[in-house]
Image (cartoon, rainbow, N blue to C red; front, side, top):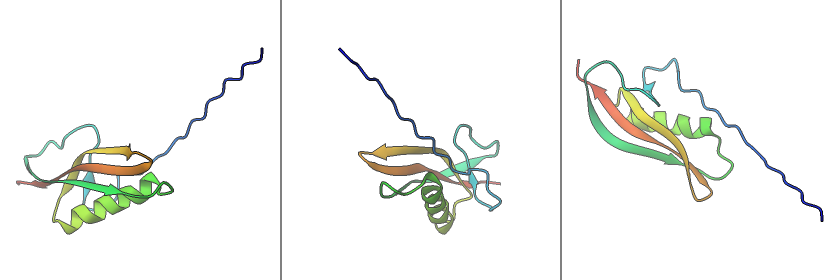
Length: 92
């Protein structure tokens, strides 16, 4: 008897510290007072990169007047990748 075990891994990255005015936070909240605005989500096709989705998320958040997006997550809905988070506005 012959058994073959194999595994594939894929590593995907997206730049989250950008030079734009909009901040992106994945694991911690800003140290300034803020108000939550909206839940935001950008989805794409199976060949969209995390960076492409992140760019779409930050563009949409900026258009909403957000100062930052917090709790940003990269995930899949079926085969389709998505990036989501909560837009915020600073109070000070």
